[in-house]
Image (cartoon, rainbow, N blue to C red):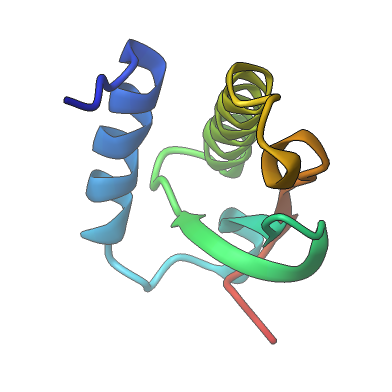
Length: 103
């Protein structure tokens, strides 16, 4: 059975609420969370868009906190699976950019 950690569960709820949001907010109020392509640390893949109506600062703050949680979870799983050659050399990054996803 897979165990979901509390910070990850909170992130899932935030992502679900964000996915249901109105897309009429100005681009300057929106932030998108990206990740590199696992396990090679290449590319730029969108994970979630944050467009909280309250303030752009809140959108950025939630995005950055989510990026930190994703990165910490990746690092933890990497340590737990260090015996696997694929996992031992795996790299990933998570970061936020202003605006909606653009290729």
